[in-house]
Amino acid sequence: MVTSGGKVSVAKVIVLLSLTSFWFLGCQTQIGQPTAESICTKPGVVTQETIDAPSRGYSYSYFIYLPPCYDRDVAHTYPVLYLLPGRGSGPGSWFAAGANDVADALILSGKIAPFVIVSTENTDSDQLAETIYNDLMPHIESSYRVKAERPFQAVAGGSLGSIGAYRLAFQYPDQFASVGMFGGGLIHGEEEQAAAWLTDMAEAERPRLFLNTGEQDPLMLERAKVMIEMLDTYQIDHTELFTPGEHTYGYWVSNLPTYFEWLAQDWE
Image: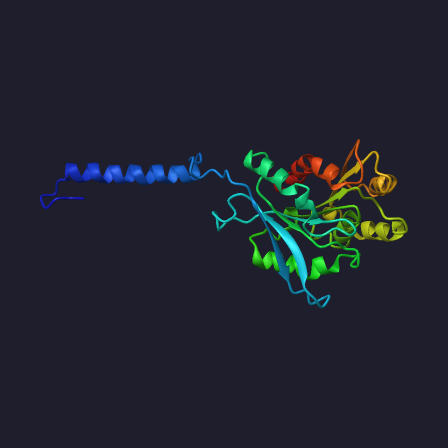
């Protein structure tokens, strides 16, 4: 600012510098280290929702986990994991076993980036998970701030849900970057179809797989090994975690920290 005599007012310069410093420091708190007020300390939120599902003719229920600070930063978008339950289980089964608590612990500690988890209905009567692909996924992408790009979309499941997970990813390799299989493997009789799916994949679209099955699992341990043999044959990147455990959500959730950190490698 200049006075009528052409000289700068010292008082006005001091005020101007003070305001500039205040503005600059304010910007620094936004782009530099977070202030105590900006750090997320509250856990994420889990809610149950329902949508119309035209492909099957009646409504569809799902649970969704929105990570810490989801409602604060309205411009931010998130990776998304579709998590399928096992036979006879409901969309709340994974969260009842503590999947959201595992995600909260890793996100709040800064070990992984925040992400959204959508827990689906079981695929007992929808073995190719067509309702998830045709109805649920478009709804999630239009209703929540999730990233639609392949590296940020994953699918996983337990038991029969793990079979639905690999069927989704093998049919739509351009959609999913990775598959998580808990207490699951290549279902008997589907060897030829799985081989056809893997053969048809472009090399750049081959998903990574994470397999976790308990060593005392009476149902799927051998089928998990069959899946690994096929993945080796087609040179599909995979990680196995076989430790003492049974065919239960409790066992699978105990290994989610390892899986979530593995999953987050796609987001780096």
